[in-house]
Image (cartoon, rainbow, N blue to C red; front, top):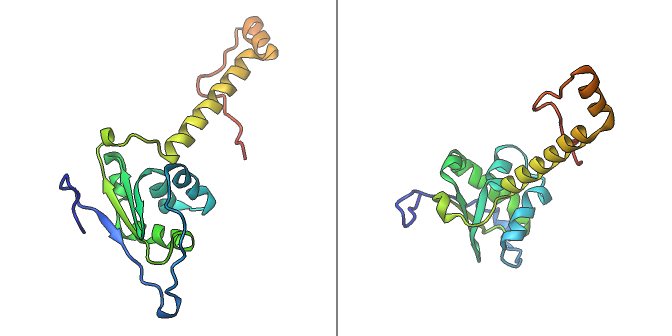
Length: 161
């Protein structure tokens, strides 16, 4: 494993394709917006999805994809997950892709992750659910007439899917 400028070790993986399947599919380099969409487009699941949604794109250049993880997500930095992510990305980014995972300081991350976007969307849906319950005339009537109350945390947003 190589080291970053800050002395942090990086995890990287390269999966060699079979000798008969060495053609590399070329695509435009990933940008931040495309990176945020990939976990859903690729239908990633489990720990590899957690890795993808909690990482930020540092660089996609040629056959190297560098991803940054906040220190609190450093448990996702592993050879196995890097290899699984590489395999999932290979159809779009080429078989020669090398995924490098780096733990970077939270201050160095200036872009959002797919996980933080999903969390913000969930918070917005929850706030809308709470507002809908609080504004419901039937609920207000029960609260006023029967001294009822809505338990904090009990309103749940509907799943948008």
